[in-house]
Every structure is written in C-alpha cells, then in structure tokens.
Amino acid sequence: MLLFILPLFSGGGAERVTLNLLSELHFRGHLVGIIVFNRTGKLLSMVPDEVPIYDLGTDSLKKSIIPLIRMIRILKPKVVFSTFGYINVALLAAYWALPKKTSIWVREANLPSISLQNNPYPKLMIFLYRILYKRANKVICSSKRMRDEFILDFMVPEYILEVLSNPVDIQKISSSILRVKRFDKGGVCYIASGRLTFQKGFDRLLLWFSELENKNSTLTIMGEGKLKAKLMKDAETLKIKGRINFKGFCDNPWMWYAGADVFLLPSRWEGMSNSVLESLACGTPVIATEVAGGIKEIAEECKENSIIIASDAQQFIDAMNKVKIKDKKFMLNSLLPERYKKENVVFIIENWLNNIK
Figure 1 (spheres, helix red, strand yellow):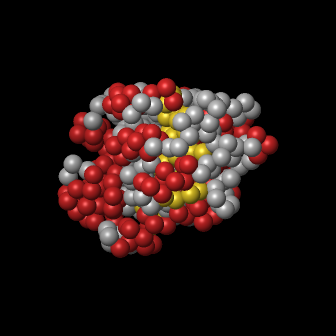
Figure 2 (cartoon, one colour):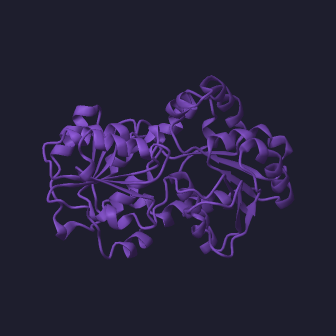
C-alpha cells in the first residue's frame, strides 16, 4: 500500500496535489489509502469511494502523532507519503518506530528558506530539517530551486532528492470549461486564487489593483481564510469594493480562470502554485512575483509572454496595466507544458514504486 497522510481535507494546494496523486494511482490499479487527523474539509469528495480513509479523530499534531505511528504499524504500508513540513518532521523523528520495510517519502510544499523564516520557531525548524530530512527515503521537491536549497542549506544528500511537478488534471479541467465566467465591467478581468493568508499577498494585491489606470477593470479573488474580513475592509477603504469579487471556495475555479484575461500571483513565498499551472491549462497567462518558488522554471518552458515575472511592486503594476482583454478565439488554448500533466507525473511515481527493493 501507498499510504498518504493529510491533517484535513481542506481546500489548499498541497491537499489537492495529494488527492490528485492518490486518485490517479488508484485509477491505475495501485493499492492506496489515506490517514487524516480529522475527516473534515471540502476536498473529501476527491477521494474515490473504494479508497480507505483512516480517521484518527484528532485536532492537532500533538494529539495525532502516537495514533499516527500506531496506525502505520498496523497497516505496514510499502510507502508513507507526507506533504506537510511539520508532519514530515514528526514522522522522521519517529522513524525508528515505523515498520522497517516502510519507505518514508516526504514532500515539501513551499520553499523552506522562506517558509521556515515565517514559522513561529524558525531556528528550531531549520535545525530539525537539517537533522531529520536526511533520514527520509525520498525528499520530493516541486522545483529544481527547492532541490538545490535542500542540498546547499539543509545538507540533504542529493541521492534521496527528487523533483516532481505538481500534477494537473487536464481532462477534468477541459470538461469543466465548456462555458466560462467573467466578473466583467467593461475592462480587463483579473483573477487570483489561494488561501486568504499573509503568505499569499492579497493585501498588497488590493493596493496594486487600486493604482491601475483602467478603473473599469475587475478582480476576482477565489479562496477562504482568516484574513477575508480584513481584505474586504481594505477593498472598501481603497474605494475598489465594487470592482472586487470575493468568490470564496469554488468547486469549479477553472471556468473563472478560463474567463479571466490574466491570473495574478502576488505571493510572498510559494513552492509550486497549483493555481498558476491550472490557469495556464485554461489558456490564461500569469503575472507573478519572483519569489513564487518554481515560477521561473515554468516560465522557461512556456510560450513567450505566458508568464510575466515581476521583481517589485511597480513592475507588477506595470505588467497589470499592459494586459489586454483576451481574444475569445484563443481563450481555451492550453499554455501548460506537457510534463505537468497528471498522467506524466504519476508515471514517475510508478517508476519509484517499481524500484523499491
């Protein structure tokens, strides 16, 4: 069994990556299962009915670690696949208690050099990463930049590091954008998506949007989070409330991505943004901050002008001002490189599984 671990089925990018991999491996005939701290969240429906869910019934890592280890010892999976740094650290600290034949694969969702600095205990977490991550059988990175960081900054052996693209379900997206949606007031339609947290940078995006030349332009923000009320208040203060569409969580964001003229990624740090990849799959170009993880790697593989990378606020605003309304004839033409397609990503994992002795 390939056993995945998540805290909840919440609507974040790391959860979507995990559940996309789980469902595709199940579809291809692999025995998979998933452990969750608590069986709640909007993405529960992504788990195929036949896949077992092992619910620990807890609400924190502290309360989960002993039941988690106990469950892994009972199930004796071929591979444990974890994708959150704090769970990765706990698993690797307790590796001696896990079945000897179980391989531990840990995936990192964000660039550790930046994300750990924003952790409440940065020095401790950096120390733990350096000590513990080398115990993993595989450390899975979403970009080459992340892999290089693990080698240079965390002294993780190169032979256990792998680069694996985030999987994009092109077939599902294509069937979901037979019609598109736009929040249109006669100008450019911008869109952004993600958890409404400090990391994602929506606070500064609202400020940048307020400075645009075209006052008929609109911005749709998809996602939920603890900063939603503050962001709505900011929009009112900046006198742009009528041009901002706080859409919340959406089961089908792709019809909105396809309908927009450009996708905006204002993040302060990222690993590999699923929303960027999905927007490209919908034929929508991207403007992103340069600290957004593997964004430069994606840009190098894409057609010219599919991704514009801004190094500061003024460059981001200038790029936004240059956006034109999309020609409907080219609205749904995918801009996504082939290697990000879900089938190609899962093929790599199958090779890893076949090579386990």
